[in-house]
Amino acid sequence: MVNETIKLESKNLNFYYGETQALFNINLQIPKNRVTALIGPSGCGKSTFLRMYNRMNDIIPGTHHKGSILIDSDDIYLEKGSMDIVSLRKKVGMVFQKSNPFPKSIWENIAYGPKIHGIKDNTKLEAIVEKSLRGSALWEEVSDRLHQNAFGLSGGQQQRLCIARALAVEPEILLMDEPASALDPKSTTRIENLIRELRENYTIVIVTHNMQQAARISYYTAFFYEGKLIEFGETEKIFTKPDQQQTEDYITGRFG
Amino acid sequence: MPKKEKVITWVLRLITYSIVVIIGTILFNIVKNGLPVLSWEFLSQPPRRSGAEGGILPAIIGTIYLVSGAIIVAIPLGMATSIYLTEYASQDRFNRYVRLSIITLAGVPSIVFGLFGLGLFVIFFGFGASILSGSLTLAFMILPTIIVSSEEALRAVPLSLREGSLALGATRWQTIYKNVLPYALPGMFTGSILGVGRAAGETAPILLTAAAFFLPKLPTSIFDQVMALPYHLYILATQHPEVHKVLPKQYGTALVLVLLVLTFNLTAIFLRGHFRKKYKW
Image (cartoon, rainbow over all chains, first blue to last red; front, side):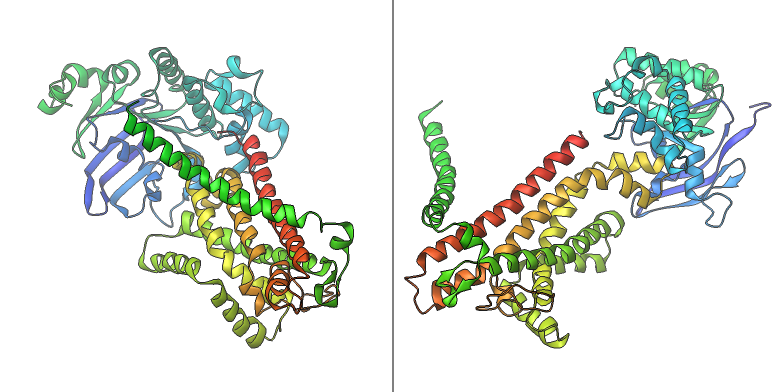
């Protein structure tokens, strides 16, 4: 981690679903404009951790946390901080495991975010829709049917639509929660290629079950186990010479 | 298929079909006896000689007024409550009591609503026996139906759509308004209008709060008493001095009431279809 700008930082982060603690004292610095993969077995807390960065866990009743999360050194959970939840989520886009296009037209899906943030001018919206769809490599496939329902798209296209929708509000950070786990290999490849293109301009944090995928697309990898951050480092190092025995056991397939 | 399976299938099928037979018999009876009475005069004239002659226009108009009033009060109230309960309320003790109250409200007999309306609207607020009192009483009676069906419609909208919207920086209300309500509205409307259809046919709640025995002129304000179809039917069938002579009028009134309720329900079905086409899943 030499010469990297730190974009996201968690400090002594603990998270609880009611009485159950899901994250234990996590300290992690995620560099700017890199792809960072969060790996670990099911239930290890990696998705929960990802959802801390856009305060998505806030909507689950009975949860609370201790510690802090910083974006560009601003504490995002500070009630009177410089960042309210709306501008936070504008800055931090999210792509979910199961693609969730809205039951509206492709155009309306993309324009949804910009409209909410006050853009009313149709010419501007047209431009945003095209730019976002180009950004998610979907434009060529859908430019002639922008006003058809998004549910008519294939699974892979729907997920790229969700990425385009996230790009439309011009975030700096993209959180991806197993974005390709429900897709066929061909669609997965397209998503991975897309992530490679996006990493030039965005800080990407991706949760994945697929270790080859982590190895293919990420620059850094964090390994979680039972709610704890076991190891963090350059992906190459994690996958070849991990410091921790648990990490090695996991990536060599001895458990998980 | 083994014989026993066949027998069971047929028994269940017959029981199910018997429902159609029951409703068919009732409707056939009403239509057969009511249709000959149905005429432009019957629909457009006020009753004469205590309903033995003339039409039922004031009762039709009265029912439409009462039901419209109930809709105006109950649908916004019910929808707002359901939105609060599904989208905002936490699962604490107070909100459990709110839910319990709604379920209890649904189980209160309609005559009790009538007495409540008499006490509160007619006497305490001094609205008298009037369209206003009757509408408010009916509104309270159908409120639980509207709340429960609206809640179901809201819950049917997947959480992932709410998350997707929130993750784009939408506020909770923006999310509900733009990405939950449009998909839930068909269900909310359908349930609500079915509740309204029930209100049109109720006698007990308006008996004490709005309905007039014989009032051959049309209401001019919401503080007027009105005739209403179910109450008129009740009068003709049980209280009229010449019950047998007015039998055709009873059937005619029943037919108009059934048609009116049917219209409400068809409207509900039409609206649902319309919205479904607009927002395809």
